[in-house]
Length: 515
View 1 (cartoon, one colour):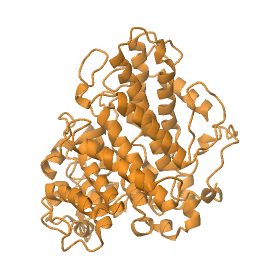
View 2 (cartoon, one colour):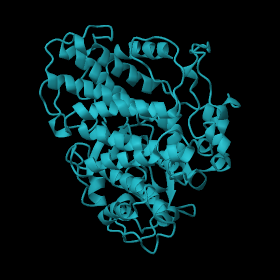
View 3 (tube, one colour):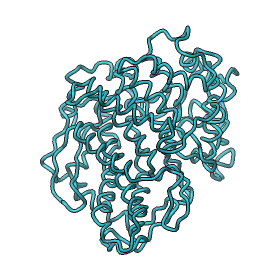
View 4 (cartoon, helix red, strand yellow):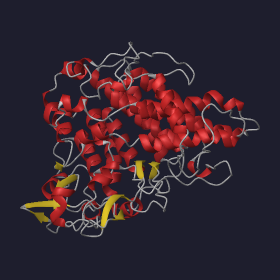
């Protein structure tokens, strides 16, 4: 496994990757770290890998997406085991991040004349990267490998989900302790860093809030070792730091319409954004946004190469108006007008009325002489706002509810509803209780925006209610055997020629029958 990671890094570092700063093409990981410029090449590579890997979550995103029709991946949505296990997924990219972060930590002492604040900046980026990677490994795979450093080349065995989450917490706390708030981040030339991908104190607090909410939930639902109540409280504490401005100044947009304006204009810093994957349009002429979900929802009229009549056959994710009406029964909710194009006007094709996603209003169109419109859709023109402040109001509400503090949970829920001009909880439409109301609020707030719904479903134990196909038939034994996680990827234990390189790894019990 480690050999695979190291070989992939060798190749990657010889190519140019960019995120604001271009890494030095002549540097490889075997170079010394004599100067901050050389050190910064590794930091920049960490940022590059985060940018290109974190949003790559197609299988679980497809399984959990709120959509009525999808052009591809219907069997993934149904959680057909053979389709899942033969699909394109890998944890290699996350281990690329881990290797690169460990490489920096193992070598930063070689850098000469490095000021303490600059050391904290570079170490903080590496520690956040490690925390984020281990969290995503635990969330997507359950059990995973926790490596020792960048030099220990040996077969590793799998660590439990609890141990992987504890590793994520350890690194995220180190990042929180040493990083400044986002407004004090600077690059090696002293220039302010304005993108929200570069880790800051607020980014680390957000990561910890997410980890503890997940850890408490899976501990309680699936009887893991740990104290779920303590985890919920810690998630609340870190969310509170974000909401109270203790780890950086973050503000809710004033309205859903203002939110959409910011989502569609990456040049204007979104006051609500805490962690974003930067859309670096300078990387290549064919580069696409890191936000695959938004990219797949964009249709006419944002797509200039599409007509309304072509939407059913040419848009990856599709929503019916009836589904949106069911999700948003309160007609006073301003998100209806902001998130959906000409809401209230029929957009009927072949007897079906479609809701037209309009959260993201800008697309990149490439010239195409073979297209009737003379252009073809490449990507949505937007950063991937991975976590924003509304997320943490609702995450805190969720954890308050799980601790039995309904009053505070309702208060947080109603902050988001009030911003949308919607009826506050409890309203005539809230018929399924507070826990479900908070879950549905997350659906409403983040629809068509991110890949979080699958994790939201798992965290709240709504697998059989909210997912499709095989999910509804899973037994407790199936779930304990790893059915809700991705199978162990083949490139974890065998090379490209099929030779076994790590005999310590075993496929999850549920997936063994389909290998």
